[in-house]
Amino acid sequence: MKNRICAALSAVQTAVILRQSTLDAKGFLFVFFAFFLAQSSAVSIYNIFIYPFYRSPLRHLPGPKDNTPVLGQSLSLLLAPSPNALYLKWMQQFPDAPLIRYLHFKNSEWLLVNSLQVVKDMLQTCCYDLEKPEWFHKIVGEIAGVGLVNAEGELHRKGRKGLGGSFSVSNVKKIFPVINEKSQILSGIIDDAVQKNPDEPIEVSSLMNHNAIDVMGVAALGVELNSLATSGSTFTHIYETMFNQPPIGQAIFFLNMFIPIRRFLPWVKANTDYLHATTEVRRLLMQTIRERKAEVFGKGKGEKGEGARKEFTEEGSRDFLTFMLYEKTVEGWSDEEIHGHLMNFMSAGHETTAECISWGIQTLCLHPHIQDRLREEINRYIPHDGPPSYAELEKLKYMDNFLKEVLRCYSPSVLIPRSSSTPIRLPSAPHTLIPPGTTLYISPSVLHFNPTIWGPDAHVFNPDRHGPDHPSAKLYPSSRDPFANLAFSVGPRICIGKRFAALEIKSVLVTVLRAWEVRRGWDADGNKLQGGEEFVGHGNQREGARYEGPEGDLLAGIKVVNFLSLRPSKGIWVKFRKID
Ligand code: HEM
Image (cartoon, rainbow, N blue to C red; front, side, top):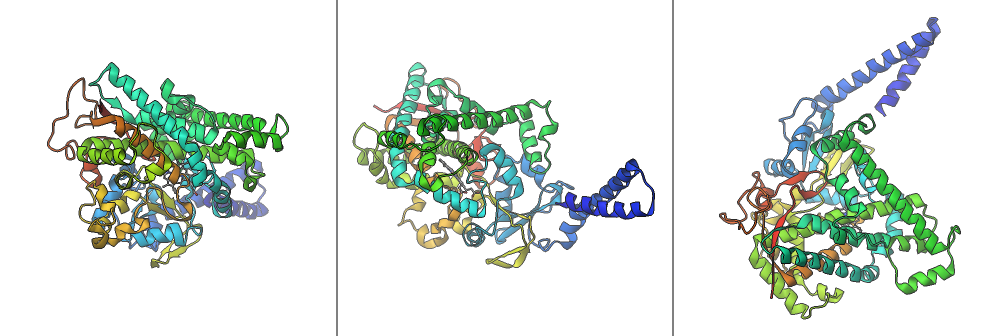
């Protein structure tokens, strides 16, 4: 925008000069670029060095002042030990500030949200007055496509309506046997590994990733990807390249939010690998859409055939792709739109779910008594060896609380950002005029570890705190506010896959806990314990914490990747012992 205005102004100024002189084409270009350079430099100097410090209506808000010149806090955020670390530090430093102002790249102003009221305004009251920021569209669009995640306004409402059926209880129930089947395969793989080497820890986060990819393959695409059986499918490799980038890849990813540099770095391997992965996932999904269309509508017909409809419904095939092709509500959706939704499901749906299960197992290793209580509940309400039914899972109340606590302490989603294209005042902060383009940043961890919401033990893992009779219900009523649990977000843009994800997580945990006792298999630095070595330390919690802060203790030595979600960088090593 800034460049377009400067270019238009420069063109007018050059035209005025041209009328008074006889310049040739070269001279014309020279004058134009000279004007353009001078004007855009002046605007940049104003935006970077003057506006945020002397003019901005946000300049008096509390926030960190230890900025790096021009880069603000961006370098510190990039180098932080976790995607939450700095935000949690600021939450502790400015406990009473509903909005914490910090400077980002080129001294752009960002606001960290530190109040439930502001969260409510952003995600509910003003949901459609705010949009996802331009930088988010750019970076998440590369990984997750357009789909719902990047749709705004009317397009988003239409998408939600059209996709509601795919994620309804009845459709999710139809997919449930697939989820259970994959959990069984997962258990079989653990069994094989333990039989070969009983004392050797197993890395669970990549295992859970393979499981989640296989589930999404069948649920979203109707395709068996066989990641678990073959230790990785093409999709697994693609997503590993995207999510597991080396430091140079992360730096490019980060810079690309502000300056489109990817195409200028064809010699950097991390960049070309990443670009190849995004092109390849698009190609594979487009190919799957074409093939399914041919199956559903008949080759080359491009129209619905009644015969095909019968065949598919009788088989009960209700993967999301087939559902989208059939549903009347979405008739007329282009391949491009369907592709966007599939990209969303594949990337938003597998990594987050796998991380949640992995952190869940990590906490079970740290808290054997929680493991015992869960196992006891499972054995009571699912008193058979077969896969759990939907109704049986619904009876597991302690499991529900455990899952809530895992999502509170280890929210896989680390950012819920919004911005406005016009100046806006939020109802809960009417005196703060938020200029257009300012990023309002919700880091779920800031609300999840806030002692004013959860009490002084907010940093402690305790599933019981979610129980209806727990004292915190009366002492800290805000902890019962739906907006205090942000792992799936809340409001019209709440995660559409929430129910599906919860089912998958519980299915895996039930399968694992019925068959296995899990024990810590990582040392104080998160490395795999060798052979029969056991972890010795004073209380698993404190040992190996990488940094001070509410989250540091809970990570128990496991280092995380400072990227788009809470992902362990060296995996999570776990010892499994068969329960007789
Ligand atoms: C533990 C697992 C999951 C977590 C923690 C999670 C978290 C989230 C969060 C926080 C959002 C809101 C983002 C925002 O508004 O900025 C979201 C949106 C979304 N999620 Fe999930 N998700 C999970 C699983 C899934 C699954 C399994 C699917 C699909 C099968 C899925 C598909 C989506 C989609 C399509 C959206 C966009 C919704 C919209 O904007 O209306 N997610 N998710």
